[in-house]
Length: 213
Image (cartoon, rainbow, N blue to C red; front, side, top):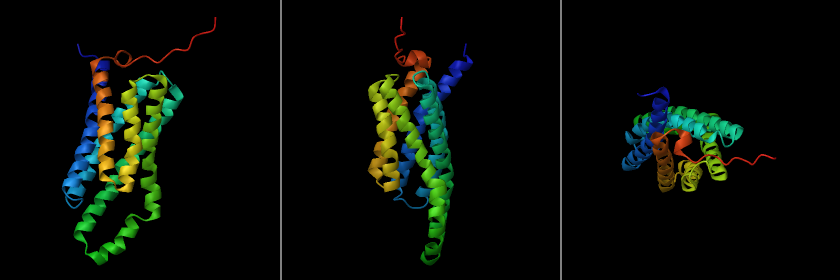
């Protein structure tokens, strides 16, 4: 009999498996299309799908790690989800850029670009997106410190989150792909563990401090 807990576990595990893979596919499409229209348009759609799936992945991480450090994990998880929400909205901006850049002549685009990517837009949409890697790094550090997850998995999660803004903000495509691969391995690994059993059974229990006599 399929219970509600089993369905929830399968949903979270699927989000962990698919989220980073969809993001990786979107980034590959962008590179294959030479960062031009319509590849850049399709890229924004792919990233939005990936970010919806990654929200589910983050919620799964919160559930697995909460017994180890409740307040820290909840705070980091909230930051990561907020960052994903801003990242989702940011793709609308990039999609508008893709269409306008393809349709406008050089003179018209010169007038539009400062409006789309001026400091007010960057401060209100791009910068808050950094909360995703900040929250994810924190979750990875909690996993490393507590032993709640296998250390290679936690280390890959931290590395992927650190490389995430370096590649995307710096425009380093190979760093972006490295980030995608690290997150895909880490979350895919955890997704398989979650699908294999309940979170308490799928990952090591957090160490329990000895109680004074």
